[in-house]
Image (cartoon, rainbow, N blue to C red; front, side, top):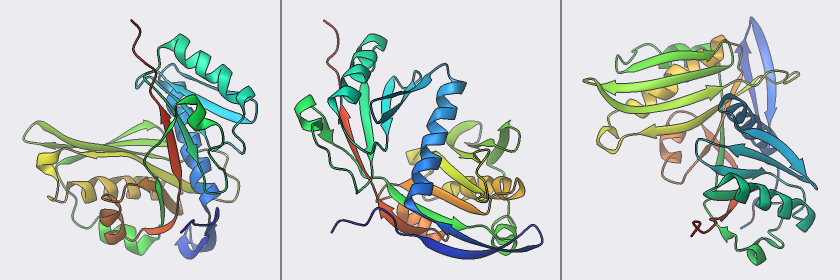
Length: 249
């Protein structure tokens, strides 16, 4: 079954001394994901650029060239970006899509269907944030990378790295105050120990204190089980397509 492009979820949250009513859509999730990649590119020496009806982000640390939620797949948009990816030595070119856009010419350019982001959301309110932070986990350290915007939660166990995740509250969102949870990783030997929940709780509290009223994230089918237990709801699924350029001879 193909999910519609927009499946809004509405919640009333107590924040800042009053009730706010939020409608969160897939477009919000996509916009926040795109903003995160742009911020990541800027922080790591990458770049964001546009070709014909296609917006791209170059991430040098992972050597990925990513197209974010195009409204149309065109040769005029695809070919210049592929040339730029080759020039920069990209190991992967990805296209993140929503359900309303078809792959079009992507298979002809050797793109293959990839994983699906499961878009999930959760309201933030004082009761849930306080309840989640009642028992802090001493394995988790929270670092503010950009004041009131970007946080890194790192998990360690007996001086061994155990996991990490980021939260990002994009600026200039207008009336909406939405934060994204990104790049959640827990080392295999530390899974099912509560570390993922502890990372999420630390980031949720930081984002809430900075003004976030809702959390957004994209999950895998396996990861969504954790997020459902923490109050997240699935509002839709996307699709990615990937091309892996051959290694130079």
